[in-house]
Image 1 (cartoon, helix red, strand yellow):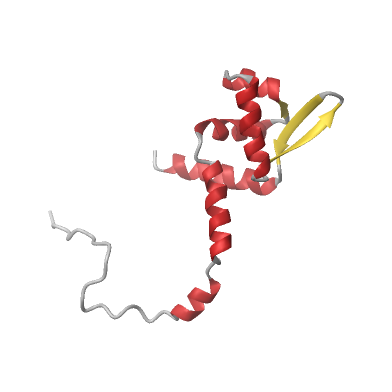
Image 2 (cartoon, rainbow, N blue to C red):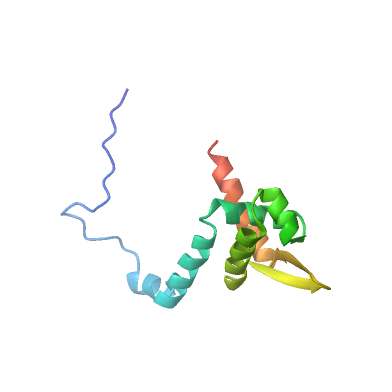
Length: 124
C-alpha cells in the first residue's frame, strides 16, 4: 500500500503563494463587525438545549410550557434560553391573551438548521 505524506498546515519555505487575486478576495471578505456577529450567531447553536428548542420550534409554534414538557426542564430555564434566542433574532414571539407562543424568526433559520443537521448526519 502506498504511503501518503502527512498534510501540514503551513506552506513550505519555497511557497510563493497561489496565483489568486488576493486583493479581490480580501475586498469580498466579511468585515470585522460582520464576522463577530456571525460568530455570535453560531454560538447560539452551540448549546444542545437551544438546538433541541430550535428543532421543536421547527415543527410547530409552542409556548414555554410546551417546551418545558418536551425538554423536561423548568419554565424559568426555558424562558432564559428563549430570551437569548430572541435577542439573536432566531426566534420570535406572539402573544395571545396571557399565552406567549414562540416560533422561528424566519425561513433562513429553518434552512440553516436543516442543512447543518443534514451535514452532521452525512458522515454517519
